[in-house]
Structures are given as structure tokens and as C-alpha cells.
Length: 202
Image 1 (cartoon, rainbow, N blue to C red):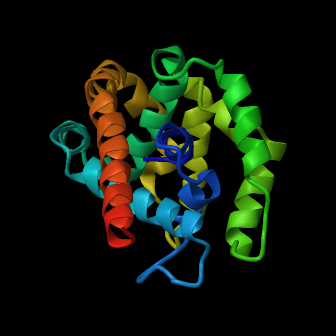
Image 2 (image 1 turned 30 degrees about the vertical axis):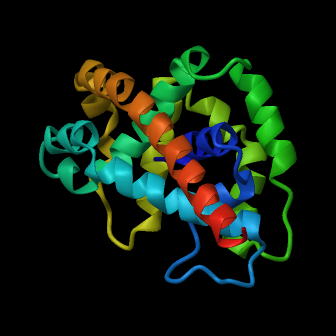
């Protein structure tokens, strides 16, 4: 999943919003010197990504994409699922989306545990209102196209807009069927982890 979903799921599960984004940048073993809340956020980020990639609805949506887009299907679907989350936000949260975004921005305060890349991301997220831009297909299409710059060689991502329109209805239905499963999974995983931690100290 992409940024909006990770932040939403962090609040839903009462875990760390900064930790949810830090999971994009931490590789390998989670540093035990990190604050516990950040460790938990990174851990949940990884659990969410693993669940998403393995889920039949997400994997099936990726498989329906034609070559050469299928190779980048995980990226495309993660971004589109953020779009559908923004579009259908009122189904999943009591707050208006703009209120949640303002709240998320107040939680994302840089500290010494953040890598430079994450600080840059949050600056751009706030300055350009990236999360709000996901509400429109044009906004998410531009966001996907910009990902092309992360690769050393050109990708088809800059030409994805017609593909998104063609597969829009199927992608949307996949998201609507999938996201409640992911919400339930995130809450259950955090509850299990906290129960284990509680038992270890009692």
C-alpha cells in the first residue's frame, strides 16, 4: 500500500504514523535502538505490505495488467488503491479526508530517527498536498508518472493514464472488496503483538 493507506491504518490500529512512513526506508533487521513506537510502526508497515502483495484481489489485479505494465503492477496498484481510499474515504473514516490529512501532518514531525529521504518526502507531501491530490485520477496518474524518475532506465509508468482509465472499474472493485480485509488484518496483528508483549512482562 502507499502513503495514505499506511497512515490511515496506523491511526486505525493506534500505532505510530511516523513509524508507518519510516517503514518505507528501513531495510533488514529493525534497529532495537529506535523508540518502541517507531519499531512497531515499521513492523506493521511490513506486515501490511506482505498481506497486500499476497492477497488474491491485489495479486489478481496486478496479473490483469498488460505487458510491459505488469512488471510495475505492484506500484500501480498501490497508488491506485490510495486513490480509491481517498475517493471512498467516508466509508472508512469518520473524519473528512482534509481533516485527517491535517492531523497526519501534525503527527509527522521530523526527529533524529528520520532519514533525509523521509524528511524530504514529508516536506513535499505537505508543500504539494500530495495526499489530497490522490483524490483525482489525474492527480494519481501524475504521481505514478513521477515514480519513473526513481529508475535508472525509462519505464512505461509515464504512459499509464490510458491504462488506468481502461482498468478503472475492475481496480476499484478489487479495492472495495480488499480494503476491509486489510483493515481487519492490521487491527488483529497489532492486538496480537501487544498481547504477546503484555504476557512477556506479566
